[in-house]
Length: 157
Length: 157
Image 1 (spheres, one colour):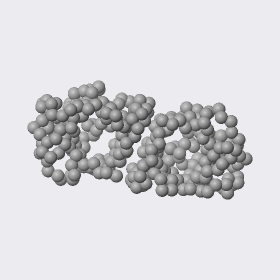
Image 2 (cartoon, one colour):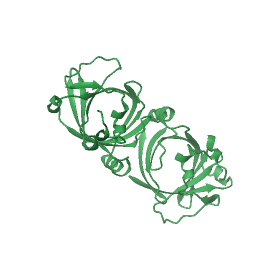
Image 3 (cartoon, rainbow over the protein chains, first blue to last red):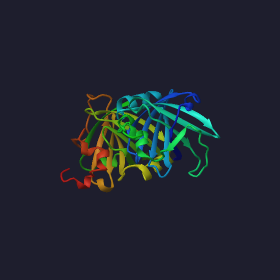
Image 4 (cartoon, rainbow over the protein chains, first blue to last red):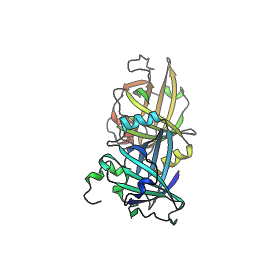
């Protein structure tokens, strides 16, 4: 098991758009329960199966396995819960860390979040000026929640 | 994706006990929903992650990945739904096919089922005389159902 320590923020303005190359991510859930999510993702030509445990603060257990691209396509197309989540991800280096900026598509268009993975919960880091309000641990921002209650249905962001 | 074509039967008498060596299987579910089960199993020193789609007749889609034993132990011990399923499995060759006879333990003690995997739904096969009633497709005999409604709670077998 790896432990994923990750903080999540809303994104402001559009400066981030030019700072990294956008890659399309397509993902779905074999289990969207935050107690034990099972996610299938395709990024480029890679299939990845990821199991995550519940968040405790900014931390959660993570088990990740590469799977054949064809398997990932089959699982996404025939087995994962509907809808799938599609987003553009940009990886942006800033002050020694990498920010992952996710620009959601489809039912979640308009939602843009940035995540930073940290070596420990209390690691200090510098925020780029396009980083807004922190939403770490807010369930409605979980990708697994966005399939049940997409951003288009939110009344207050 | 593999397609698993499997028929399941109850087992009678005790002749089967001496026909194969018993291996302990310990397994749990990251999703017990028959629409998309995600199973973690330890058999001997092997960890296996298996995804299965819904049964259509005796067939269902199956995606199987070996995972490190330590990962399988962590997933079973910390993440899978309670209770786990434990059973002794015996593999018994008969008339060109292999029967898997599962003798359940714990809350499912007393339940013994035999499964035969076939190359097609209409393949003919010979039944050993310790094979009883067919239960293919009966949901309560699914291993994923036995964690919610174990054999000890059944009133009629």
